[in-house]
Structures are given as structure tokens and as C-alpha cells.
Image (cartoon, rainbow over all chains, first blue to last red; front, side, top):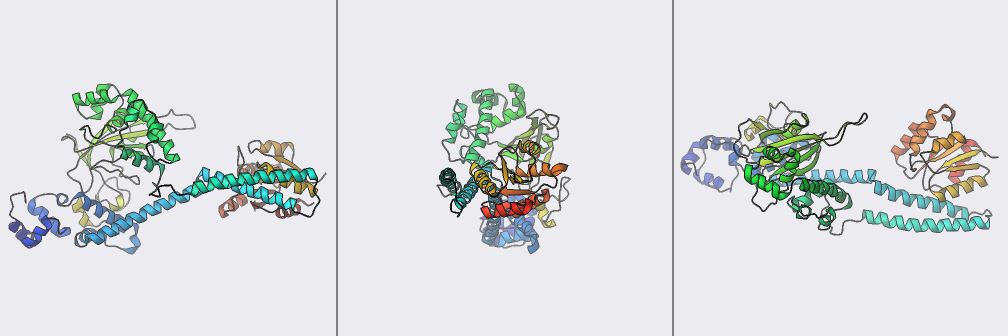
Length: 418
Length: 122
């Protein structure tokens, strides 16, 4: 205990034995529910301080699992008790729920691929067309009817051509359906594949900082074709950003005035979004704090997510209170706000967001809007209010939130997680 | 001159095979390979029936069928759809748009000939 309270006194105050408290203090026992509240009150700290981030993630996963299988009627309000009493089983439930969700998503992606993928449709169409032509032509040649010699030669040639085409299109189809050579896990979508690739590079690409090309970077990884195309778009933007704001100029400005992207944009006479993208690609080993980044389109769909310690943005349904969505409602005006997420009351996230038109409106086509948000965990103390951000409404404990879309499946007991 | 069949299909060897078996059966077969200009061909040389592939360059067979049914002069024209897709939803779409028949590739020559005979006679 670091708060000047004797272990025995605290144990007596909360009604447990000193030895049990000792086990709790050394992470041999998990605490939750009423006991967690009593200890928090005795120590005069927020309950969240007594549980670590992994616990929070586990509890969120358990609650999410319970809402996904709502017809089973799992006691959502007892999630903390389950995690505390049977952490292994709780982790198993959470892991299985996560795996089910991942498999469902993957199944959907594969189903979409089978249904809509133009490459697959083209390959199948080619195979079936060849087979159809061969079948019809062969039937003509083997019929009892007399066929002119010229027509016979013509049909034989057609059969040969179609047989060659069938062999080629069958090869292409087999290659398409082959698993990747490494046999490893296949990323679910090109977007996620690119993000995983970029995370491996810490989002900093020295090759593009120094006149290299997207192809040079792609050659270092194992991106599949759709992801390569997506990465090429990213690389084009990256190279344009580098040309507008070279690393040396950015780092010199940071040294002068600090990390605030809005202030930096003013100092450098450049756009906030450009500065945000460049700050999110600062080298990881140069002593700069980690910056998270989200780029989304006008419909709120995340086009790019860079998570960092303390900040994770969902690719699915996100809380509408994130400042990036406020920015979408006021195109061209930067929005800056500090936020906190449930379970991490002591981790403020400073979000700087701006939405911009990236195409011109036309009579039959509205302009494209893209919003960019830079996120800095644990910034210096701010002066404005701190916005309590939520997670998916079904498992968000903020019952009275103005942005709530649907009722929470959590019980009132979970409000201590705020 | 026999009944006129317009075959709108982009695979040359399928065109050749179907043209051969229908011509030998007494039909006059005209062919067209491009979806974009198929309606122009239909207006220029009105047939007694159409054999229409779904996957065509320029424009899909479904779009052409929709236009055919919207025009009074071809609203009742027999149309046999040919497609590599045999799923229920494709059949439903073809039926909803007014296809007379739906034939899935790979088909047999006998099937094609029998359907054409039944729809417009020999």
C-alpha cells in the first residue's frame, strides 16, 4: 500500500482478512463488484484505478459476448464477478466470443468474395463459357448428321481453341482459390491488411521520406493484390505529404512549439489534416510520444485507424461523441477536445480533428468529405471540459448519454466502471 | 426464309455453334455481340425471338431485357436468357424482368433447339 494505510486496517475496514487482501494486492485474486467499491471508497480512489486495462478489456469482451447471445440470458451484471472468481474461464469465454466474431466476419468476407468478386466472376464465366462452347461443338461433331468438311474443320479448330482457353482459365481459378503460400492467417480485408502492414512499420516509411516509391515498400512485405492497390493510394498521399512537410521541417517546428497539431498547422501555414498525418508517421524511436490517427469518410466509415497504447478506435460501430464525428458536421473547422473512455478515467485523449472536402460537388454527385483526427494520449492538462466517450452502446455503461442509440445491456452495477 | 432469331452473345464459338444448329433447323439467325448497341440492332432488324446472354460487354442482358419489355413493340417478344449463373436469385430477376425462358450454361444443343421450336415454331 502506497497511501499510508496499513494493510490490516484496510482489511478490517472492508471486511476481509489481511491475508486475502495480501493476495489481492499481489494479483493472486481479482476483485470486483461490492468489494471493489468498498476498497475504492476506503482508499479514496476511483474503482477503475484498482483494475488494470487487461481486466477492462476482458469485461468489455464478456459483456459484448453476452449481448451477442442475448437469448441465452447470461447475467451481464455479474461479468465482473465471473472475471474475478474464474479469470481463466472468463478469458476462455471472451476468447471464444472474439473468435466467433472473427470467424463470422471472415465468413461474410468470403461469402461476399464468392458473390461479388469481379476476378472470381470473370474466371468462372470464362470456364463455363469454354465448357458450353465445347459441349455444343462436340455435340454437333458427334451427331449423325452429315456436316460439310469445311464446317468440320472449323468446329475442330474451335474445340481446340476452347480447350486451350479452358485449361488457362482453370489454372487461373485454381490459383485464385489456392491458400497463400505461408499458410498463415489471412487478414480479413485489404484495409486491415494495409493497417497491419503499416503497424509493422510503425507507420513511418523511410523509403517514402527519401524519394522511394510505393513499389519499393510493397516489395518488403507480402501484401495481396487488393491491399497493394490500397497501399499505393496511401503511399501517394504519404509522398505528397512528405513533399509538403519534410520530416526535418516538422521536427524543427515541434522542437519550437510542441506537439499541438493545430498550433503547428498555424506555425507552418499548412492544413491541420496534413500536419496530423505527418505527426502520426513520426519515427517511433526518436523520442516522440505515440500519436493515434483516424481518417474516416463522410459516412463515418474508418478508412485508416492507427491505434496506440491507451487509444483504440473500433472499426465497427463507434461512439458518435468522438470529435472526428463533430468535425464532420462542421467541414473546414478544426475541432479539439479531450476525451476519456470507460474504464480508463485517468487516461485523457486529446483529439484534434478536421473534416475537408476532397472532391468538388457536381449537380448529380455530392462532394466527398474526409475527416482526420490525431489522438495524443495523456496530453498536458487542458482547460476545456473532458468529454466522456463511450464504447458500443449495447455495452456502454453511460446510461444517461445524450448520444445513446439503443439501451445498454449492462446492469446498473456496471456504472462503477465509469 | 425461316423465323428470325437474334442471338445476343459475346462468345464467338458459342455463337457459331448455336447459329449452326438453329440454321440447320430452318431458322434465320442474326447475331450481335455488344450489349451497348443491342437495342439498336433489335430495332433495325426486329426478330421473332431473342436469345440473350446475361454477361455482355457494355451492358448486361438484364438491362437489355428491361428496355425490351418497356418498348410496346417488343413487350411480348419471346426472350430466352442464357447465363452462366444458375442461382435462384438470377432466375427470379430474369422472371421479374419478363424473360420467357431461362437457360443455364452449359446447355445442350437439343435444349436450345427444342425451346426455340416451342416458342416460335419451326
